[in-house]
Image 1 (cartoon, rainbow, N blue to C red):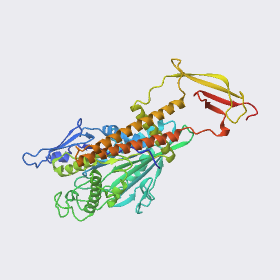
Image 2 (tube, one colour):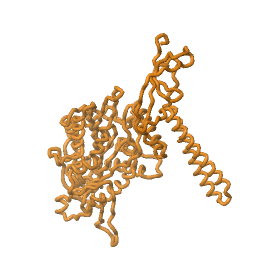
Image 3 (tube, helix red, strand yellow):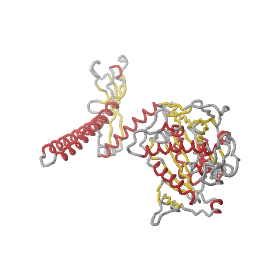
Length: 548
């Protein structure tokens, strides 16, 4: 589906910091992160700072400290995006950060306690509450759930969990997954049930950093189709898609954890002190699944970082979306047709300094990415919308130049009058007409609308011609001015040429619009109906019997 093209829009990036954990407090770790909620700033202090080294400060669209509530983040940051999805935009929310910093808590939270519910359950409630209150629209909501585990895409709702899924791309709708399960849901209870089924199949496990760590990237996809009857009596369809992304944690290998088997349905409970590294110490934690998982996770997160760096940089021509499955799936969300929110999750403790700094730098680059979101709608609706926008744009230009003013209120009088027949019909008063005379509030006769339109067109032509002649004169003066050095003269000439080109384009657009909406001459057989006489008066014609 095509849609309304919008001006570029930056990713909305917010930062959230969890409180110190009991384990961190018991170990004597100090807090090195401070947040200024009013200014939207995060300040990070290096616990190993050299003398004179200043703390690093980062500014984002919003920051949420350890005392923030789940509802604060949702209402202030996420709610406007969900409203846009309901209007037919694509939207993405993803949390990024070190493992154990609260990504899953932010995205999902604790479902049984309303005040602890995260982005996903709040979005469910938001969507279906909106639908229940709608009167003139019909909605269809579909849900899908997938994960990327060790660079393989898994359908978490499929009866064949081992089935390999392929990425495809549609020029109209973007990247999609072939044969991904999709379930129609009619209320919050049904969509929560779909998500619970998928969560039971997610790959999670235990690491030194987190007892229940996501070992995969998970994406819950909600598609909202809206059908609305327009004034033309036709149904107009908009389709919004919402990606709710829970990324696996970024981490160093020596923090991955013990040599445990890779559980996929429930958290791994495998054991103790970590292979070659000794305890929670410095090794990779053995040769089990955890280091392999961490390697794949870091590989895809590194690809994500490369995409963000390329999009944020002004010189990049190639964006490496194809370097990982994750970046391919997020292609529309990063630099494409979507409104996107990134939540950077942070740990406040001194032992997490390197990871926190990495997350903050990542988020700081991401806020420079520009997307181009548009409403996903029927192409016919798009064409109509573009015409309306063009009319509004040209009207605004005329108003800006003082060429359109407020018209006085008019009152019309109609009187019956016999008028002469047009050429080709018998002579005499054979046509009866109602003549409408338009007057303003001061009883002064107003020129009829076609005359106003003609005068407006003529005034516009004169204005554009005057501007063109003025620019040509200035251009000639620059060419004749021998006091200007060649380089400066060339620069001025280029500027004038550009202004002339802009003026020519504006003139063409005005002529095109005038041609589009100009009333065409009536055919010979279309005499009956409203007309204007040479004096500009409106009359409605009905033929005498025998002339029909």
